[in-house]
Amino acid sequence: MKIASRQSPVSVPRARSAAAAPAVHGFDMRLLASRATVFIVGLAIMAYGIVLIVQARFGAAPWDVMHLGIVQLSGLSFGRVRQIVGLAVITVACLMLRQWPTVGLIANMLLVGEFCNWLVALHLVPVATDIPRRIALFTAGLFVWGFGTGVYIQSKLGAGPRDLLMLAIHHRTGWPIRWVRTILEIAAVTAGICLSGPFSIGTIAFSFCIGHTTELGMKVAQRLLRSLTEPD
Image 1: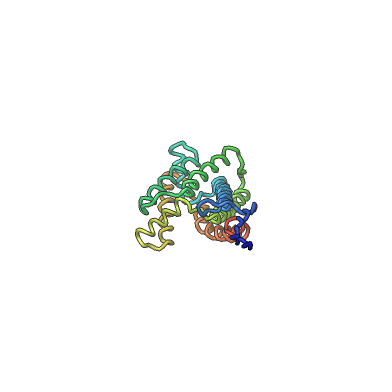
Image 2 (image 1 turned 90 degrees about the vertical axis):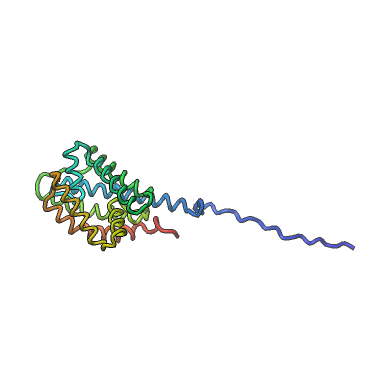
């Protein structure tokens, strides 16, 4: 009498889908690469807006009043001064928060300065002499800067050095964010004026307008880039 042997079912491993995104230790590498690309593009756009504002010669942004004052005294390039000041700001903020800087924070500090230098060296930003064109440059700079900020924020790879300092002071003192930001801007522009930086009506206009163009830029960037920076 033959007894049929019962065979235990053999599990067949599922073939890994070729379309599946590679993941390492829980990280979606394609999503990370996509966010990094958006981050770098956003910083490049923001740098273009920064240089547009400077080239319009109506007065720089509050921090750039200080940066350009240091440029006049030191002879260093605008981008290099932004990097040096950014490094000092990061150091102070990280000491206050007792934490190490993130890769995104360091990249922000380095890349914006380099992009500004390249844009100036390669003459990629127009120069205007008459008032109407200078106004056009300044206005374009506000919107380009705001959009670039929105793009790099949408990448979700971290804030810039000055924003980290604002958060660090808020964390240590408990002061409201709006007052911390105002104090930092006033301190930067005061230092810039003492260094003979380009303070003018454009500096005041920038302070009133950049928040609105950044908010608009964030909304547009989220609508355009959400599929690239958020998991499915």
